[in-house]
Length: 228
Image (cartoon, rainbow, N blue to C red; front, side):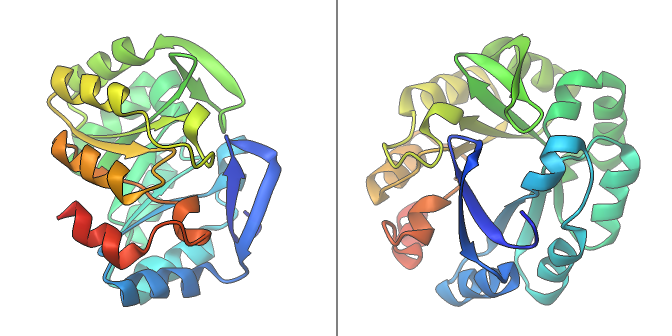
């Protein structure tokens, strides 16, 4: 947000903590710890469907060897192309996946597994527009639809756990991984090595660590080891 590395508490823009004025330095620290993947969200873009932090995102993709994925505000094929041409490895559709079926199908058919869908869950329903609104889709109905369209990667966030350091929703991820044959990434509340080990045992594709890294609750090197 505003060119800085920040975290929100439960998706609340009023509860934002700035952790670094230079996200590229953060990305380079990930590399130094042994990370291979970075998950980036343009929180500004998520609100209004723009790409205000494009330049810093491009730098991270081009100046590190990390597999780079970006979400937040991607609501047209043009924006998808802009990011992929800038060297990003994967683009995450959130609000657009809910509200624009034509765009989702076109993007998946054109770019295959370079397209992921972010499923952000609020009270059992899929949230949109930077989590400020909920849609009429229940979590499982939406995931079923994504599977049928051919989406390979789902990034599923339990908003009630996000940034709360209360542990991740293992029951939700267990159910998702049993029901759907997709690469599912857990996000929201991943706050201990125990969480990571539990998710690995469920056979999940990955887990996203945010706040736990920034406040030092999880040692990134240890987390990567636990994920193996």
